Length: 94
Image 1 (cartoon, rainbow, N blue to C red):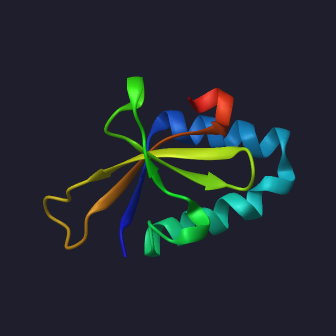
Image 2 (cartoon, rainbow, N blue to C red):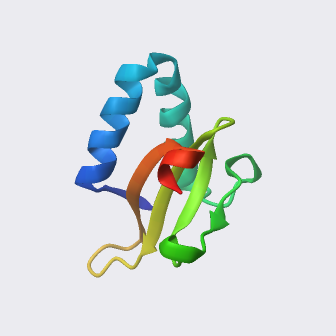
Image 3 (cartoon, rainbow, N blue to C red):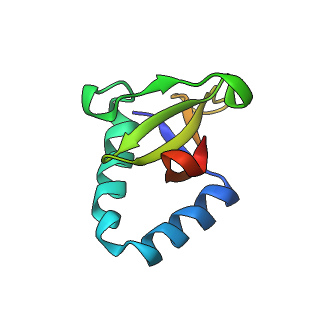
């Protein structure tokens, strides 16, 4: 199981998203749990990004919502981490 590392940008964006769309809260929590255990689970549709976000990854939270993240090496911990960068609609994060 990987450690989730929340960036300040991700925290602000997730709060804003849940405030505007409270029905997404459960989907976001479920996606983060699954991402932590199985980052390449088929339902996440995890994919590598290109262009200005090259080197980062994204997964789906429902139809139009995405979480952008990086895989990071943990220095002192046993498992590697997932650094959460952004959450938003497809058009907002890309």
